[in-house]
Each structure stands twice: as C-alpha cells, then as structure tokens.
Image 1 (tube, rainbow, N blue to C red):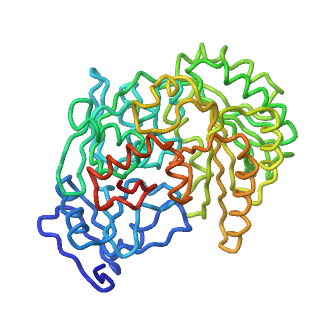
Image 2: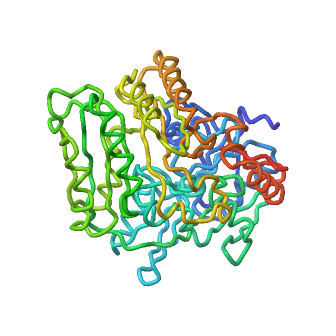
Amino acid sequence: MTDTSARSFELPGFRGELLHPGSDAYDDARTVFNGMIDRRPALIARAATADDVVTAVNLARDQDLPLSVYGGGHGVTGSAVCDAGICVDLRGMKGIAVDPEARTARAEGGLTWGELDAATQEHGLAVTGGRMSGTGIGGFTLGSGSGWLERKIGFTCDNLIRAEVVTADGRKVVASADENTDLFWGLRGGGGNFGVVTAFHLRLHPVGPIVLGGMLMYPAPMAGKFLRFWRDFMLAAPDEIGSAVAFLTAPPEEFVPEPVRGHPVVGVIVCYAGDPGEGEEVLRPLREFGPPGLDMVQPMPYVAVQQLIDPPNQKGFLNYWSADFMAELPDEALDTLVRHATKPVSPMSQILVFPGGGAIARVGEDETAFGQRTARFNVHYISMWAEPADTETNIAYTREIATAMKPWATGRAYLNFIGDEGIDRVAAAFGPEKYAKLQELKAKWDPTNLFRHNQNIPPA
C-alpha cells in the first residue's frame, strides 16, 4: 500500500475540485450523516464530469489505494469516505433532465432525493425515493430503494431503465435491458460493488403534486392494540397506501399534546399515492381507530411528505442501525416488539415497521439482484444519540431488541438499513444462489475488488 500520509495528488485534466487534508473545505467535505464516522481520505476528488470519475478511479487502482464513493453520505456505515485513500465525491454532479412526455428522468449521481423530487414534481411525476430528503440517490437506488411509493410503483431499482457507469478498469459503459444486461441486473440491488454510476435514467409516474399524507400519534399504552390493527389493515390495504409504524419519543413541541411530550409514543406515517379524496375514505378506518391523540394527516405536497422525518434525523448525531425482514408478525412478535420499543434509552431513537406487498412483491425474485421480495414486513432499528459516553448503552439496546425479534425474521435484511455486520450478513441478504451469481458478476466487472468500501460482495 502506498504511503499517502503527506502526499499531494495532482490529476491532469481533472475539471472538478481536489481537496487535500488541511485545505479549507476538506473537513466539512469528509463528514457524513453518522457522527460515529471520522475518516480522513488522502484525497477528496469532487468530480464535475464522468471523465473526472474515470481519472479518480484510475488513480486509486493504479496506486493501489482504497476507494470510496460519496453520493449523499447518508449510509450508516459511512462508506462514502475511506481512510488514506481516494474519495470520489459526486456532489458536484447534480444535473437532471426530466422528459414529462416520456415520463423519464436522467439524474446525475450527486443528487439528493429532495433535489430530484423538486424537479420531477414540477411535472406531477415521481419515482420511489428516500424517506429523508437529504439521502443521495446513488447508494439508495443501487441498494434497491425503499420509500413511501414502493407498494404502488415498486422499489427505485425497479424503475431504473439505464445506468451510466464507470467501471473498475476506467471504462465508461452503459447498463440497460439491451446493453451489458448482466451488469444491469447486478446494479438493481447489488449495491456499489460493480462501478460508479454517474447517471441514473429513471421511469417516472404520475404522483401529486398534492397527496394525502401525514402522521397519526398514539400514547405508548395503546401500542400493542394499535399495532395489531395496523398489521391487519396493511395486509389488506390497496397498493396506493405507503405507511410505517414508528416507535419514538414525542418531541416537546406545541403541536404535541402536553401529557405525552417527551414520552414514548407510537406513530404511523401514511402517504396515499392516489386521489386525495379517495384516500380520505380508504384511510378512514385507520384514522378512526382509537381515536389518535394527534392526527396530522391532510392533503399536502408530495415533497412535504418526503420531508416529514427530516427534522428528527439531522446529520452529525451518533447512529447505530440494524434491520430484518419478517415473513409475518404474529401477536407474540408484536408483544415482544412493543415491550422493547416503548423503553428507548435515547429520546432520538426510533423503531420502524414497514409493510411489504404490492408492486414490490409482483417483481420476480430473480429479475433483479435485490434479495427479498415476499416478506410481509421490514423492521428497522435506529439508535441515535448525542454523547459518545452513551455509545455502549445505545448499541446494546439495538442489539437486544434485534435479537429478541430474530425468531420471526427471515434471515435476510434490507442492506441500506444495516450497519457493518459482516460478510455473512451480506451473503444471507441475497441467499446462496443469488449471492454466488453476484460473486461471479463481481469477478467479471471488478476482479480486484476495487469497489469494496460498501456492503461488499467479494469476487468469486
């Protein structure tokens, strides 16, 4: 490995910005969403073009340096930055072109979902996107892309129709249903293992600009009864309903009833991806259960729904995540979940339960690299806290609740929701046959495992 401790790199022809340790913008550029991550790349190469990406990839390969790719920096593993290597920073590449007649968009890899949503919603169009507006489109899409619209129009990767890719050997190629079809298959759920996607071509759908969305909130003692109702309601729900139950601590805000401020509560977020008037009737049973202590469901811009959970999820706090797919959630599982989730050790922590089904389950298991189509539920454990002294307690809490729920887990997980849990966890996410196929694909497109700073699939 080349010593990069005091080295300044020059990249002839590079049109973007080169940030070395000690430069003014370096420390800000290397920060990511998860405050636990503190890595120092030898060079942050903020690309302006795909040719810049080629130059940076070639440098890392030729100098045998670690390589990372920074899109949005939201992944809990902090894989956007590496120590003593080359960080290919796509945040200077934010071009977007929407074709409202063809209902497609070409979106460069440095965009966030807030930026992409704003552009597509000008035409009343959308594709399934991150539930936080600051999430980058790249790692999210390559990891499959779970969002509020998934039950109606599928994962983001199901709507990927073409990808512009820089490969490990420095080539610029296109992957689609007609070109490099094996690579196209692997990009849809296989993560950043096969190249740097500099532009995504996405299929768009009529959504909004006004949808019925928002949050209902119940006090913690109602959690068990409500969760049973929500489970049964969502198993029979139309595809237009995107939803999630959230165990959280009620914020000390005026809109929250005073008795529950600062106390554990259970909330449910909904987004009806159809006519808001129809949504009022479809969601009526959910809104009349209880009734809720707080009902903030109303017609609102789709972009507002996409920002609903931004305020409590700010960059810089310490994070530890895990997740599991669940084939079912019987009453015993719900009781176990409620028992743990209503006793958080940090007021910033959240436990989220997402329903499956709908469009995501109608895509064939082998049509994309994504490894779990039929699970009824996806449970995401998020510990978030402010003080490093509380790290051990919060990690232990997450592991305890995840372990308690294992009897009902399928053994697979949505990789965008988990931390660095080891190669066996990655392999299990795909299952043995699909994982073996991905390893063969990796051996073809990245035989030296240059793209390894991710939920890694080593070459066969």
